[in-house]
Image 1 (tube, rainbow, N blue to C red):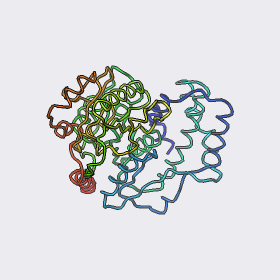
Image 2 (image 1 turned 120 degrees about the vertical axis):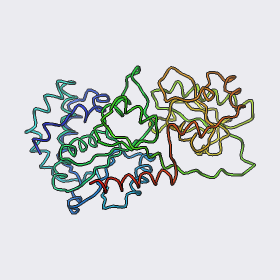
Image 3 (image 1 turned 45 degrees about the vertical axis):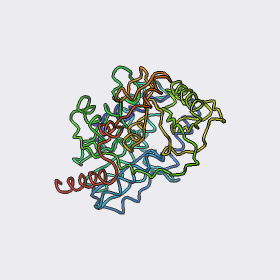
Image 4 (image 1 turned 60 degrees about the horizontal axis):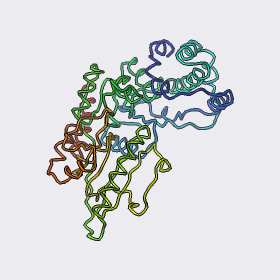
Length: 383
């Protein structure tokens, strides 16, 4: 295992962490170190010596969980969902390896600072325990949810070195941030898997540009259309989908535009926050708000750069995007607005919303499910 570890690109493994890490106090480092000693990863996978498909997801988020489970269920072969949860117990692996891999510590400290480097080093040693577990398991294909998450990228690189097929899912719509560098660029730059299960052609083109060695299989996203409620007493609503907190000023502009139209047309406003955002970042007019969480019955929906724009469009919703200088996936100009007046003009026009979205999410529902099933079959046939 040690020889393979030397070949791993840890800057790719911890690309996301280097973006997010901040100075750590001695107390924080000590707490993290002690937690690493007192917890260890689940070893129950060792009961399954022969596995066709090993699935891994490190982030626990409702929308991510749904997509992961949906794709996992399309695989009918011998598979295992590898839990990355840890339980209490003395972690002798961490104790031993925290003093025998100091060359890694030097690399991390040189890249950042002493406290940040130590924090990432402790994480790295903790994750190496997973590789030690995998060394005792015979699996043919590794399927990860998001290759750029540190532990998943480490498992991908290690599996590549073992000659095992590696596959990453697409967990969101990726944007070309070449002229606006930020953490989201890593979604296509740092990916190390041999295969990408993409939603549509825009993602395929992005990977062909920045990571051309990856084989892209377009499988779509298995979204299901919901029946609209046919209750005439429901007040007409405008949906507003907020972007990441980084763009909260644009979220506020969307909200104000929705309020203005709602007042003119005697409508209500439904707001869907981004999972990382907080309601406390905004001031809401309760006289105009509809407390429903459901966007399905909205007459139309306003958004900025969120990938939900394309998911809603492909499901037949009428979505309009706020124009800004922030990089985003392409969208027909008939669906983009700068002012409330421009939005009102475009709302009155006819447009093929589903056709526009197909560039980004080519297949949905059972058609998408079938694409994933066929991909897993192909890997088995070729192995």
